[in-house]
Length: 149
Image (cartoon, rainbow, N blue to C red):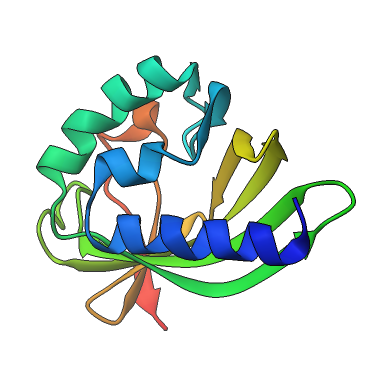
């Protein structure tokens, strides 16, 4: 793909995300997609990813991703996509409160489709003007620490 083709595909993909259109989001994925989210959970294959994401899309209708910065490497067919996620927080003690989470996706293309997507996220969130530390699943019994921004 040319740089312009990659950018056009990403624009269509971003619109699908904005519209919470799972089918539209899935359209850009390769059948052999390898996905790893910010918790380290891994999914292989387009059907498995769609199944994994279907409940997330159904339960998190209030999410919104905003592009903050995108780097396209046409030669390597890779993209670095820096984003901001705004949504009702799922974090213990903050459920439903407006949350801002920032992260980066490393995206690899093959045959015009996304073959690999690695998602990384900061370990602090912003909720009601405070920084809240993400707590590993094993430590969820402990409260998140927060402090002024």
